[in-house]
Structures are given as C-alpha cells and as structure tokens.
Length: 102
Image 1 (tube, rainbow, N blue to C red):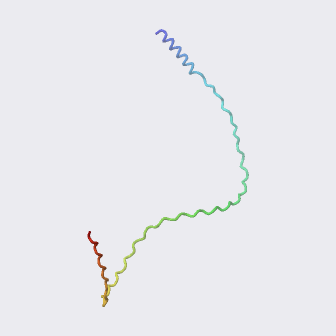
Image 2: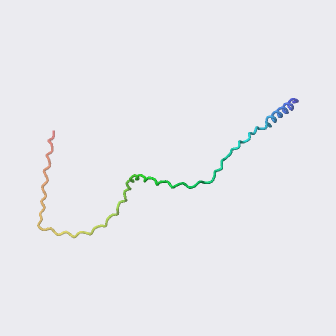
Image 3: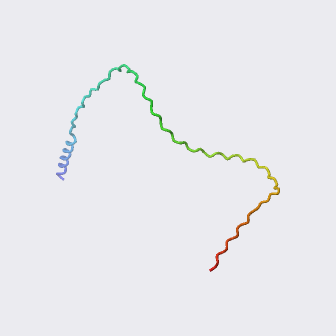
C-alpha cells in the first residue's frame, strides 16, 4: 500500500507530460492572385454556319380505332307470288352396297 501512492503519482506525471507537448505550426504560404484588367473591344461577328443535314423519316403512326356500326338499311319490298315455275331436284344416287360378311 505504501508504494501505490508513489506509483500513481509517477504515472500521472508521465501521463500529463505526454499530453502537454505543443504541436509545431507551419505558417501558410502566401499565394499571389493576379487581378484581371479591363475588358477589351468586342470582336467581329463570325461567319454563318453550314446548313445541317435533313432528319430521319419518322416511324409509322399507330392504327386508329374501329369505326362505328353503320345504320340499318330499309326493309325490302314483299316478293311476288310465283307463276308457272317448276323446280326439278335431281334424285340422290343409290347408297353403296354393304361389303359381304365373312
């Protein structure tokens, strides 16, 4: 116990001396900045540029919407009664024979 106080005091002295070192300060270099003078006279106007190439053809447009339904037409006239017209319907061909049984 008698050495603990002496040891603590020695450690504190070393610790405080280590933290108390002044840092070296380097002075900043002086930079000379040139100051611009007055503006000069305005220059001549430049020549007109060449005409540009024509642009590419655009893409096809989208298809339009379907049109509206048309108006219903007028009702036709009633047909005339037939006269002496005869309609002949050909007879259907006979059915093929069934194959013989084995």
